[in-house]
Image 1: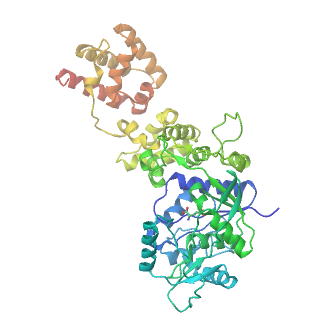
Image 2 (image 1 turned 90 degrees about the horizontal axis):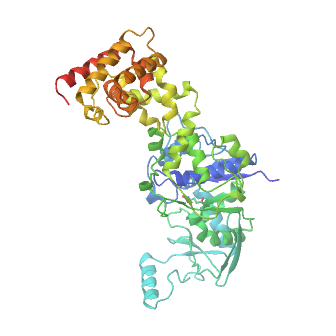
Image 3 (image 1 turned 135 degrees about the horizontal axis):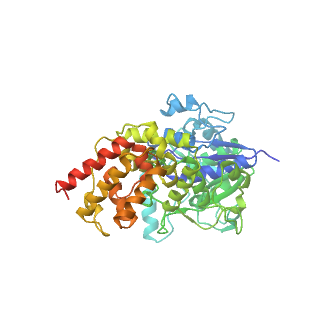
Amino acid sequence: MKEVRTRFAPSPTGFHHIGNFRTAIYAWLQARRWGGKFIVRVDDTDRERLVPGSVRYLIEMLQWLGIDVDEGPGPQELKEMGEWWPEAPMWGGQAGPYAQSQRKDIYKKYADELITKGYAYRCDCSAEMLAAEREEQSARKAPLGYSGRCRERNVSSDAKHVVRFKIPDNISMTLNDAVRGEIHWDNPSLRDTVLLKSDGFPTYHLASVVDDHLMKITHVMRGEEWLATTPIHLMLYEAFGWDPPIFCHLSQVLGRDGKKLAKRHGAEALTVWRDAGYLPEAVVNYSVLIGWSPGEGEEQEVFSKEELISKFSLERLNRAGGVFDIEKLLWMNGVYIRALSTQRFTELARPLIEQAGLNFDLAKWEVLAPHLQERTKLLSDLPGMVDFLFKNEIERDLGAMLGKGVDEAAAIRILELATNAVASLPEFEPKSLEEALQAVVAELGLKAGPVYGVLRIAITGKKVSPPLFESMAALGREVTLSRFRETLALLRGGSL
Ligand code: GLU
């Protein structure tokens, strides 16, 4: 069997969201599934839409996601694009360069070949002429597009010109798409499209077909928005006398409102997700499931990278658009956070806590870490959950203590009794704290919830916090008692 070779061919026109990276992930899975090669190619022929920094972004995000690449732009190519940085990967490869802007000679050669064979021609129509042509067509209510004026004019190569593809009038074509099945085109009204622009840059059609062929791509996996251009690509393969690859047009990723996925659906640049504490494993797992399922009736949703590779198949890609649901991703992120080792959890959490200006203390953290890991869905929520642990002064929402049988006098009483109960405990640890405070609840004749609510606000400042007894144990006896004292002073001073 031929070696499977897939590619991710992004245009560096901005900071792509998960919808684009999902295409890369599928192509990578297909390559890994069959022991093939995964290639990154930079489709940077549209010079007007280039966004500096987006190649580096694309590469860094692939690395963050854990998508390993076999061939792609090497250091020299990145330098020429102005996108090199010291830790850039050393990819390169036999089929390079992998940036289309550095393959102009190749496209020229193949455009010339098509001219020689009579499949393409030079056209020197000026922008004004083309505009006038369009105006005239629209006045006649005729379909817009190039008339073919230069088809037989034999324009000299010295003139400023573009190269156009000669598209036959009556064509019908069939594509056997790996995802969408058989697709027919009957006379798709295509006009003689430009293959090579007057500045020597190719258009997407020529560059894509030539590169996919020369790079020996076996499966072209791309978004379904490219389906409409596939007839042109098929005709180009035929004109060159090349076998076309297998095409897999992937369904769109949609937002929850059924519209094309965008930032407003939570699909930010991946750097935003990374910095918010999404784990790359969760992002990969979740995004694969947006348009693929392992099999009829299969309930499994959490897959290791190895499982995804061994189970991935083109046949199980969905034809219908998939909905991106950030809540589901958040849930899955929680699943992955729970599965981390405590050490890894700490390594990931610590910088976020320190960046929030808090004084990280490992001993205190370790008491709470397992409980935090249990309930965290997003690592960036952690600083707000544990700030009480690492701060000397906390702010308290005293009003939240009241209600459910607790008034100001009761709150004072709760804190007095709790102080007595825990001050002289032989061991200041969760189990004995729980027993001592249960006795306080019984003595007061109140419900546990409101009593613990008062204590929680006293030590953390908040209504919602990590588990109470563990939080007290993490703070230690001295700090716990001083926070009780401070709260009592506030209550007695009439702060409520
Ligand atoms: N450069 C195209 C894009 O930005 C690639 C389309 C393809 O994969 O052929 O999506």
